[in-house]
Image (cartoon, rainbow, N blue to C red):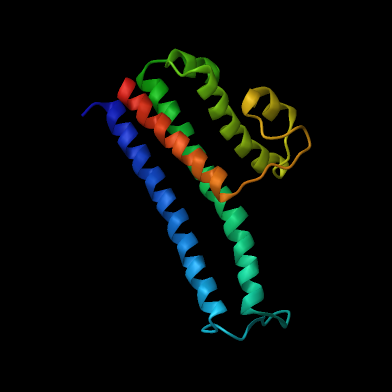
Length: 181
């Protein structure tokens, strides 16, 4: 098995593990919420340090916010990192000059202009959440082109559909890289 194929298989395996985490965590939450609704988990939870209590139903709402936002960000960050690590190693294996910009390396690999913009939008979304609390900056606009999801100062949405679509796009790009080369 050649090195590129092995790299691709290892990266896809990592992404699938991350996606499993996303799906299984989502289903666990759904089961928990159903149990609360049916009354199997009633009562409250108390923070012994502050003596603050909340009902398990209120706690479910907190978990829903976590599921719809923070979990998606965690999963999204991990998959974007998998792609970045994959592409660094792929570029080395293909002997692409290290001093070239990300976009130039993608062009050398035969990636279409639209796919470059889409990959940039995904990577810049991660940048906005990591460094700007999710708010769009000029770099996001410049690199995302027609795939931009908001203007400067607008808070980007990180929800399950966006994370799911982005993860599948990245996974398919990796498979395409390996199959082409």
